[in-house]
Length: 63
Image (cartoon, rainbow, N blue to C red; front, side):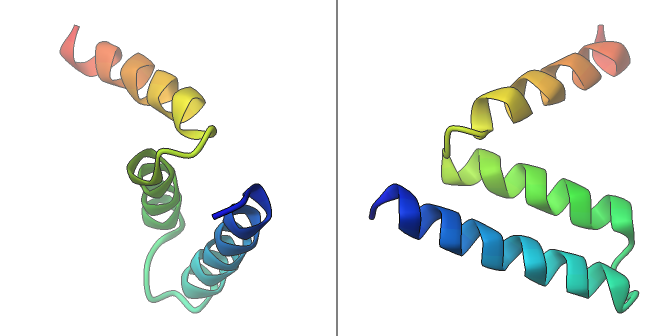
């Protein structure tokens, strides 16, 4: 899989999440969490900043 394929798939999934949240099937914060954890599971280059954000938020709650 090339970088172009990854960008096309991620763009489609982003569009799907936006349209799902606009139809009010899920809330906007749920769509955001789904997208962020999807990047973590996929292991894309965007996963590293997402993991840093998750760690920073987690340290606020769990010390």
